[in-house]
Length: 107
Length: 110
Image (cartoon, rainbow over all chains, first blue to last red; front, side):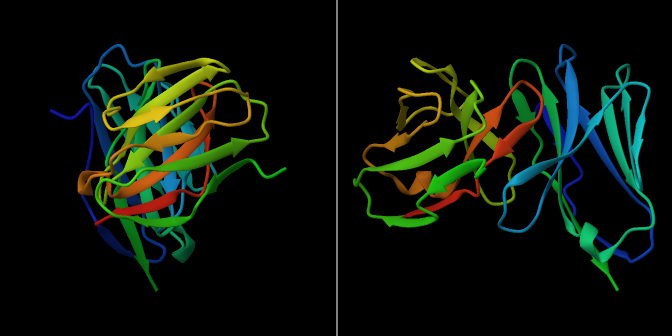
């Protein structure tokens, strides 16, 4: 079993839709969690950290459920510019990366 | 500030050749990392360094070597390149949480 697992995707959604990404992690000792965004043929960049209380940054909301070892990312009112691959990452002295879920926003 | 720079951007190697991927940072971070990313996969840690003179193996170190003589530079050496090393290589710097990545080196071994 992979340490961090994500929906394989791709997700094809119309502009303006709400998109939800799911992620599970196997190491209960993982201390922190993050969502990174990676544009095609580019390097990953931090999108947001994930806190147990849930956190929001504009149209993006991240949630962590430690009991279920589950992380989510919600994008509301999706834009064409949101098209990218979204990587779920856990941290336990090292970053452990999910394979990513590709999102394609259609006009 | 350039952040994290990597050279070359692209390289094609023949089986058995060697090369060094260069990485430099001007962010004054102690931690530096080398990852590889195969198509459709997440990043795999090759080597990392917590400071000048200190390096350690990551998840997939076989076939690679690193050195860290300065805070700024963290080169990755491939000896005897194999087709399985065809990948995109990312250098990164930062602390335990947010990491800042270079633009990557696309390596093909034929």
